[in-house]
Length: 317
Image (cartoon, rainbow, N blue to C red; front, side):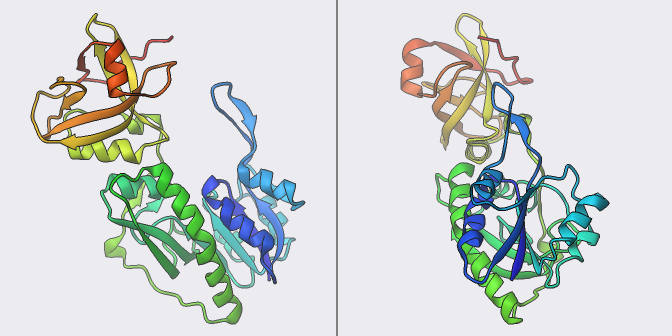
């Protein structure tokens, strides 16, 4: 079977590795997003998907817009039987979906139709879901709306972060891909309509998505801290005893019983939440510093409160 793989996110690396080693698979090319500036130095970096493909001698194509006619023509010239897509980052046009003889298969990191969209891993934790998984789906021109083939479910642990769930779903995806490709090759792959009444959406995140709103409940904020770790991270304005205001990153926190005004300190680094309960911050990081436990932080700093209004402005260090 001749396959073209489209992916950009790290979550798709194990699936690409499976395609590279699977018998009966001819990987014609890898399509990935253009190299982008990233990191503190904003140096241009290739995705891990590209690095793996280059290392294994597979053609790499990086169109700025995959819907452009020249991009569609380039992929069509590869004459794929099947497109396999995971975390590519662009919506495929119908003209491209019509190219492969057997169709286009998407691996989505949620239990569709729940959490369609760009950030399903984060959304599952933010919603307090007890399970997530990988769904293989026949692609159509909508946003994760196509008929499903397979769904494989895993439990979300009580202390799960977006980072740990991402890695477990990445490891699960090749098994779903293997079975889906086998069924497609045999001509027995099912097509199950999604129940639109159960659909939810997971919009793209940015750095502001992690801002802590102390008017929310402690449970909600604790979920957000887990959902935004390690990226984009949860941020909170921290007011030190001397009046200095910094934007701290909160890496670990749990909801505990108690009450205090939003942003007020109720002992240690337990912070009042307007929606009920206290947020007990276990690990945080100041600008330019390293992550530290609450105990280590309090040995060197005295905290007046957390900013309960608009996000505090970070001071450059």
